Image (cartoon, rainbow, N blue to C red; front, side, top):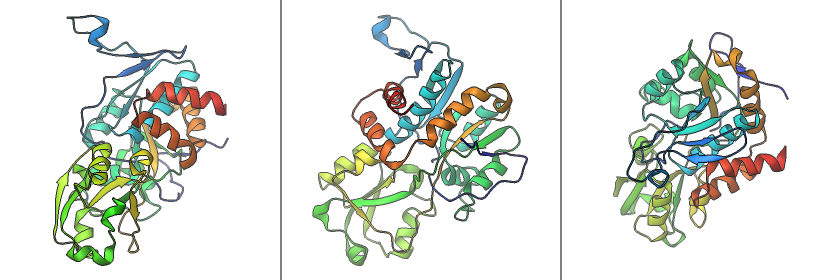
Length: 314
């Protein structure tokens, strides 16, 4: 398979805009470690040592991940691929700041992070300069240079989509007079393709916006008709089931391609593990990721779920 890198010190090839994300603050699960035999162990589990505080088992690869089911499923695929390459791996909650994430990668506190390219660019430039469609990976590579490298692994698009309960009969044509609660993740509230664009482009004025970082809770509240509209990522497959996705004729949302960040030094020190991750992500499509995301959303372990999937395709 052709391995495509966007080097931080070289000319970056143009890529089509698609999906990742500035990490979102949440109460993420404790780190999970998978050894080369495919065993996963939850770290800091009180059941393992009642009355004592435990520490996470050591792992050669530590992967930073966001809190949503989609982000955890993607990190699980990366970790499962590393395990197949014979290296122990763990996932851990990512910092909420893109600056902190890049800094931690540069010092190899993490060996890998799965991100959304446009979201990370906006996090690094304070949202002042959104990348043009197709330019997000190139801009990201420039921003994280020289200590972090960007790995172009997927055409999965995690762009924002807006959804409502079918009972609401929400359309942009009736949005100007629609009243009620709108739900958004906190990082999207003031972003250029978030609430400000809805208000300026589609004329939404009477919605009361509330921050809700859990896609599952946003979906639950919409299905219960406690809110009239909510924002999701295109990869929140399970959460979007049963909701009506509202078309975006003015295309206010930005493509947000899934990418991987790694310390630049790992390109030379861990080529087998990095190649394994790239090969695994090459097999990911909306059709193959959807059942993984749904399984994680309903309580399955991300790494174990990904290992089962990899066994079926490799």
